[in-house]
Length: 288
Image (tube, rainbow, N blue to C red; front, top):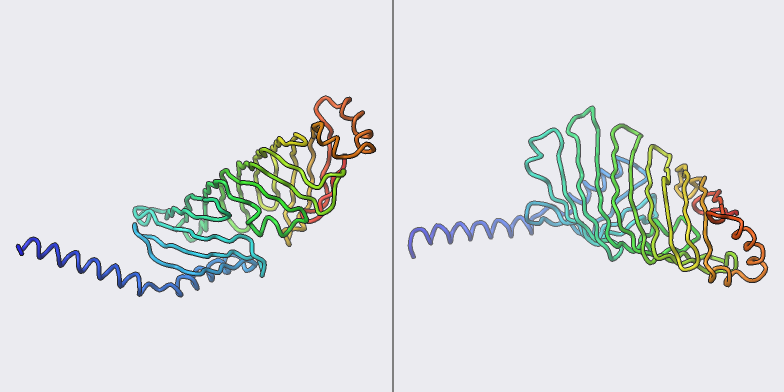
């Protein structure tokens, strides 16, 4: 064996042994405990439980079976998330991380930018969502009496610059959405929509629905307004208004009595029936 081949062989051998040792000696428990501590330190209401943590190449971290909880209630279950630093950013004022993950039979990816300035305390997140089944997101189901299924896609931009102010902007859309009522509403057990599209902003505790349009098998419509976030989240108050254009199958499903009451309003309304939603997230009140 030539000298060059021996050098290559031993170098490859040492590299392989090093990688194996790093993998098996990786401080998985310490990483999981540190992550849980950081989340709890940032907000004591939240906690993170991680099933497994392991290194990946290019240099990064893979977390599996991650559950984010608020108090003792699960908000989201993430089957896997991979986090990788942008190495050159370690030498700059802000450290950048990229991440990809899977949840609700869909995927997400994005970037996290963390300021190194002690006075800044700034975090920016950009998250892209693709076909995530919201029926499998506990945090979107448990606070409401209405069972909702649909594929969520879109983008969320999150900016936390100074405590406790949080700003966010989201462009989201839902496909193949079904909203099931705990008891019939206007004689209907559920509403089905081909798509729902919306733009939402958040400043502090004020969530503004700047626009939301929906197109369904029973009705089309729009919604705008404000949600004032409260603790607990399901107690957040609703101040929403909008309009709906019922289809013929909606009228047929409501029964003759309700249809007879709505028909004159529909004929006189050029832009659809105006409605209001008041109450809370867990108990919304709908009125025409």
